Image 1 (tube, helix red, strand yellow):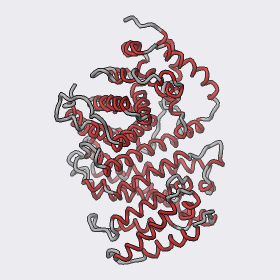
Image 2 (cartoon, helix red, strand yellow):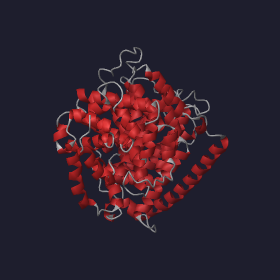
Image 3 (cartoon, one colour):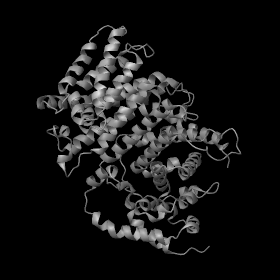
Image 4 (cartoon, helix red, strand yellow):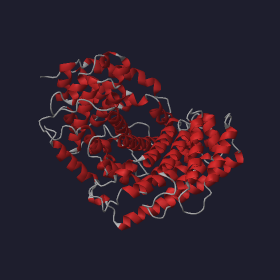
Length: 564
């Protein structure tokens, strides 16, 4: 197999990433537009109700900078009371940048009291006013009234206001400020990414899309989604819900209020077509990003947004917490879009950034000597996204990545990243890769064949040749063994390969140990488990990577000697 396959793989990926059916006809587009409008109206009316509750509450904060932040927030609003559509005068621009700089210096400390004080003083509303000029410009290509640098500074302050601040992120969701961010992002993407009808199979995104403003918006959204996941309101322990959620009165429960808002948000993002636009951006990346930190940062933040959406969608879907539960319902439409776009083109992008240096010479089938930190960060975020989608809808993940062309690209990617991790210490990446191979192969005979085929050492052999600690240190065993079990269970051929490197009795004993300890956790409620799934190491547990009902059979299978 040569990497001249690259052209074949890329063609297949691109052909399947923009299926004819997905180029919605006018009627279908009207329908989704209508739905998005309806969702937005509902979200806005809930937000009004929430805002009036917040005003009545008259929130306060303990920040020593409270008075200064109030003054700075007022300054922002004052500087921006220019009604005409002309560009801001230079002295106004300098004053704006100065004010933003002062706010940044206070918020950079990431002290929650300061962040809350700025929000309570109307800081986020002031920042929104500034960013509003981007959308209000009637001509999409018109020069903005505010220089791009100042807009990026504004986005940076917005990001600092939310970073690691659960209360502000929850406010951004409940006050529906998050929808403004999504609309602004969509506006930016529409400027730089042509409509699907004109797109030459996704390759024609304007490179300016990777500039600061779009990337900054993606970063804020990723930060907000990540923060919401880490602070999911727990159904059994109401005090853990941020105070800000506790203001939502007359609702059956805080959990339901949170869940319905998250579902509306994800539905809205799906219906405005934001994911289709992001797909065009991913497909337009045709080569390395080693030396292009702008594109790399865009890709990291865009995949982090997809990862956050999958995690939140899983957490609020209300189904059983186990990923092997087949009663899948996704009212948001997220899984459907991820399927029709072949994971939003992320797999294709990852293949292109990892295998660029070797395409011209088909005989050079080895990956690059090394990858830069930029590329590795994009790989880590992409795999996190794959893994969170696998948790959300395992059969969909397995069928997309197991399809012709894509499965070949996936195998090359995994093999190359395992090789990289054998040469460099990068535990974060290695663990995402290992978990991903497990999701890919669990209960899937065809995908099990993929990990043992191809050039030697195969993916399966590389997993068996990981450093000794992965077979001796309990923390690392917990990462590797569930994947080996998933890749080899009920597959005698894979088991023989495994036995050449290690004793299968180790896997049988591992299952036995888990069987004994799992009885103690059975009495937790499913909401508790769903909530803990992402905020702890729970996703590494055997029960979340290999179905419990097959444990005993698997134990017997690994104890049985295969006839060679």
